[in-house]
Structure formats: structure tokens, C-alpha cells
Image (spheres, rainbow, N blue to C red):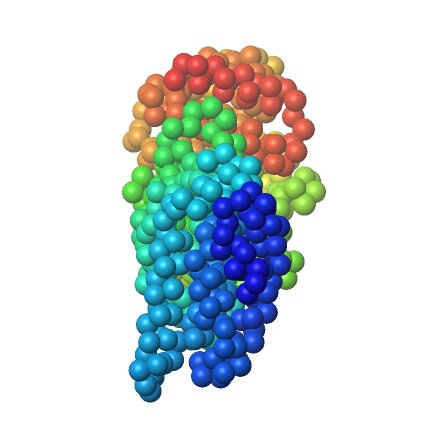
Length: 552
């Protein structure tokens, strides 16, 4: 009390310096005082500490103490307010108690208004400490943010303590206020605390515009948030996850060079694959890919992006836990579990000489599910196709294997079926069989040309059956044959010399040119993943890709 009486006359430099020197000690004194007060009722407090009112009044009216509390000691704000609250009688029984309540509320009103205004005492205090007028604002902002973060986390940990729980309305209001501030670095801890806050109210507690603003800032790399916060954001606000997918599709459309590598970088930066380890996130992302494929009639860019996502997702799943928290059926509920496990194999973990056998096994399992009616519980041909294209690299390997391996006479049938099925789910058994006949005939001609000492572009055009008579092939079958021809150009020794001429003959439309570019990009990306050693083929693919992109 004597010290506070001296500090009341804070007009000299010596008094001001003495106040600053002892303020941390005074803060600790207030904390100890509150620990004693909180165990007593109002009457007991006045009886034990008769001068408590004077002490708190001198504290509340001292400009230096308030300025210190306002700027640097957030905990003191709470303690000072809590000490005053301890004096309030819930049900005053007489006029004396009513007057005490009124007097205490007056002090509370004074300090609360002080905390919310830019007071002259703050300028005086900072000048004595040697601060420039603008230097204390960052400290004030940091203190405010840390206070709110502390309160949110405290409420999260004490969620079942109704007396200390933050009201949902306040959380919602706070998130609304933060909408224009989410990109400020000092606000990142508060943004994270709001996203990861779980009260006892529905998920809609956070202001929707806040969630949208955070998601946009994250996608544009204006804010850095941990995986836990992003997962909470997408689980609690589905439009944010949908917007992330739309942003991915926009990237897909705008990317021209190093398409798949750029998509992979965006995938990992967006945390989509890691977040998809939560089945609810995976199912939403997977459904959006499903609709994109249906809307674009199986566009090659969407298929390639789905395959990149799946590979990154599997990597994230393996990295997160060696023992899976969720069964794979949780992610692929309409698929045969044994088929999923086979498709999940990493080709790089299988000796290259056994790739043919692995492809044959996949083909047989798929064919059994698709064409055997007893497997109707797996959702029909479309679900089997949709599962297979997640791991579409197997189909690309099948096309290469048909041209590069010395397979048994009957073995190519399984690989031909796999390629025919990969073209799309709409074809029935009869149409797939016809596609296999067409492709097998082209393959037979290509194998003869492979052993030919001389090779021309016209020879390949004739082998593909282009320009001949007869009914036109379905578009999917034509696309499949083009893939075989392109593989032939990359792998056949004589194909390198005529590659450019053949592609010129093939690329009669912009759509086909686009398809060839996508094939080359995807092939190089897959070779990098599988560490395929084919220097001459790789060099040709890189040169062709660069040239075609220059023409596109």
C-alpha cells in the first residue's frame, strides 16, 4: 500500500523508473493475492483483508500499472479482473453489499475501457521505457493474439468445465473479425487455434468466410499452417476442400510444361494426399475425381492427375503409419480387397523380369470381377475401371510389355484384355473382344516391323490400318492403337529415325497433338518413378515433348 501510494505520484522520472523496476514483482503479488481470494466469498475477503478495496482501486487508477498490464502482461489483465470479480456479491443482502458491488463494477468498467482504448498513459509509459510511439503496437498485437490463443487452448483442454468454456458465439464472432487478418504473420497462431478449437457445438461454429479466407491464403502460400489445422478446416468446412480441388483442376488446365511434376508439387504443397489419410477427406476428393472423369468423358489430364494423387496418397499413408489405422476397404468400399492389395504393389519393388507376370495376375483378377456376375457386390464394371485407373501406370506398363517382352503365345491375351478394359468402362464384353482383335492385329504387324532392317513412316501407318477400308474404329480403340505406335517409336531401334514423321502423320487434329504430348509427359514421369534405364528412348521422348510443346 505504501508503494502504491508513492507510485500514485508518478510525476518524476525517479518514481516512474521505480515503478517500472518493480512491476514484474507486483504482477506476481497480484497472482498470489488472487490464489487466496478465489477460495473465499466476498464477506470473508473483506473481513480478512480490510484494505483490499483500496489496494485494488490504487492499482486500477495507476496509469503506469495499467499501461504495463495493457501492453506486456496479459496474465495480469485476467488476474486484476478476477480479483475484482471476487469482491462482487452474487446476491447482495444489504445496501453496503450493493454499494460494494456498484463500486467494484465501476472499477471493472474503468479498466476494461482502458484496455480497449489508446490512452495517454500508454504513451507516457513507453516513452519512459525508451520506446518510439509505434514500437509498442507490435507488442500489443502479439500480446492480444497470445491471450486469445491461450484462452482457446485452455477452453479446448477444459471443454467439460462449463464455467470456463468459451461461448460458441464468441468463437464465431472472433473468427468473423479475423477474416481480413488471416494473412498477417502475427495472426497465424490465432488462426491455427481457431481451426483446431473443438467445443461442444456443431461444426458450423466458425464463420464460413473465415474458413474460405484461410483456405485461399493457404493455397496461395500467404499463410503457413500445420497439417492438423488444415485437416480440421476441411473436415469442418466442406466448401474449403471443394475449393481446393477446384484450384487443383485450374492448375491442371493452366499447366503446360512439366505438367505432371507441377501437379505433384502442388499436390504435396496443398497437403491433399496427407489429409486424405482421413477416410472422410479421401472419399470427398475421390468423388470429385469421379465426377470430373464423367464430365470430361475420361479426359487424359484428369486421369493422369488422379494417378498422381493416388501415388502421393499411398506414400503419405505408408509414411503416417506402418500399421494402417483404417482398412483399405474404408477408402475403396466398392472394390475387391484382394484386387486393391495387388494394385497397391509398387512396380519398382518387383524385378523387371516379373512385371509381365504381375500384369497378367492383375488382368485375371479384374476380368473375374468385371465379367463374373457373382461379384456384383463390387459395384459393376465402372467401379472396377475407376479403381484400376487410380493405378493407371499398370496399363502403360502393359503396352510397353507387349512390345518389349518375349512372352508366351497365350500370355498377351491377358495384357490385351487389360489394355482394352483401360480404354473405358462403357464397353461391354463383345466390344472389348473386338478391340482386342483390332489391337492384336496391329501388334502382330508391329512385331514384324520390329525385325525389319528398313522402316518407314508409311509402313507404320499401314500397320495401324490407317487409311484402309472398313468400318471406322471406336475412338477408344484408335487411342489405344496410337499408344502402341508411340511406344513402338520409343523402343524400336528403327523407330527413332522416323518418329517425327510418324507423329506428323498421326497429329491431324489439336486434340490428338494434345494426347501425344500427354503420353510423352506421362511416360517420362513414370520412367523417373520406376528408374527405367533407357537413355536413347528417354532422350527421344524428351526431345519430342519439347518440340511438340513448342508447336502447341
